[in-house]
Length: 119
Image (tube, rainbow, N blue to C red; front, side):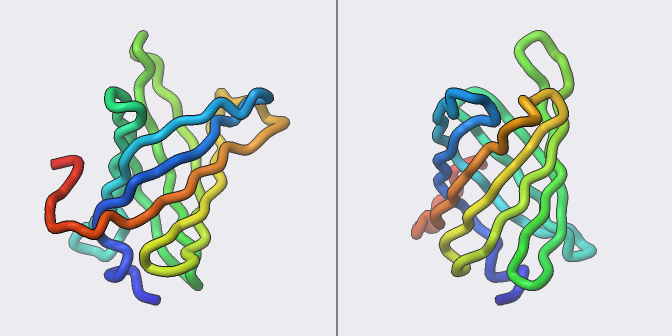
C-alpha cells in the first residue's frame, strides 16, 4: 500500500479516552503536502474540528493532532492507524489531557464518492 492510496474522505466512529468509552462519529479527510506528509482534518460530531500531520510507513499511519476546546484550551495527541486496506483504517489514540489508563479507538471507512465531505 502507498500513502497516495490513503488520500480521500472517510466516515469515522470511535470511542473516547475515558472509562465510559463515550462514543463519537464524524468525518476524516486525508491529503498530502508537497513533501508527501499526511495532512489530516477531522470533523467530530458535526462541530469540533481537529487537524494534524503525520507519516505512513509499513501500513501504519501516525498522525500528531491538535484541536481547541470550546473554551479555547489547546489539546494535543497522537493517533496510530493500522491500514487494513486503503478503504479501512483502525486506530488507537491518546491525548495529553486524556485519562492515561485508557486509549481512544477509531475506525475510518472510505467514502466512495467524488464529493468531499470537509470542503
